[in-house]
Amino acid sequence: MLTLVGLGLGGPESLTQDGIAVIREASALFAEGYTSPLLPETLAWVEQAAGRVRLLSREEVEQPETLLAAARDSDAVLLIGGDPLSATTHVSLRLQCGEAGIECRVIHNASVLTVVAGELGLQHYRFGPVATLVTPQGDYRPLSPVKRVLQNIEAGFHSLVLLDISADNPAAEPRLMTAAEGAVLLLEGGVATGARACAAARVGRSDQQFWCGALGEMAQAKIGEVPHSIVILGELHFVEEEALAALQE
View 1 (cartoon, rainbow, N blue to C red):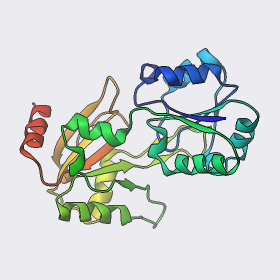
View 2 (view 1 turned 180 degrees about the vertical axis):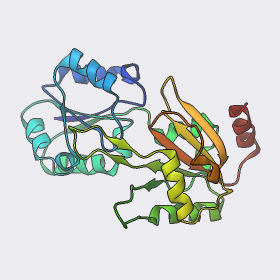
View 3 (view 1 turned 90 degrees about the vertical axis):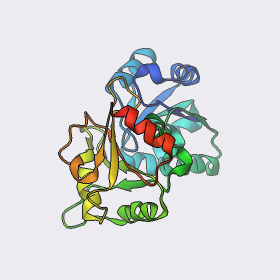
View 4 (view 1 turned 180 degrees about the horizontal axis):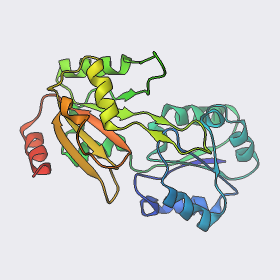
């Protein structure tokens, strides 16, 4: 059996009781940090409680022969930051388990997809589709996610903008896009300089920070340590206005 365990957004204290039990009983422990960053202190706790954790590359999760082999012969666990099924990668992995006749269980946890909006005091049903900005490579600057933001703005919806994580090599320190870098890409893609925007840093952790202002000011703003997320605001309900004003006091 393969169990996908969501680690949540904080440190070891964010683990659920179900997650802790599964981790301690696992025969093989794996983790991936390219869909959501992994906290070193959480991995350290897991290794102390249950033994060595093998970090997998993106290719090893998307082509999961190693995972499936381990799950076929024993109780294997894949540790995932946030909530497991927030990423299409893990939905595909669960489907691959089904095709291989391997049971796949999911232990859910908190996700940035819901926590950022809640902490800002924004109403979830007033958001349009989520956009993910990708780090430019040379002359290649993928701006199709910005079109989604522009469509949301036109419809009056808020946009949650996730920022790229470069973590293809599990042996190397991952590189996380900052809100300042994301703001530049949004501006280059046509989002107005004066668009109202918020940035969230290390949301769900004890040192989380938030910033609100015009998008054009975000590149110079002091926001806090990564990971970051951006919200481009649409039309605001009066309760949302009050929540944002209280956040800035």
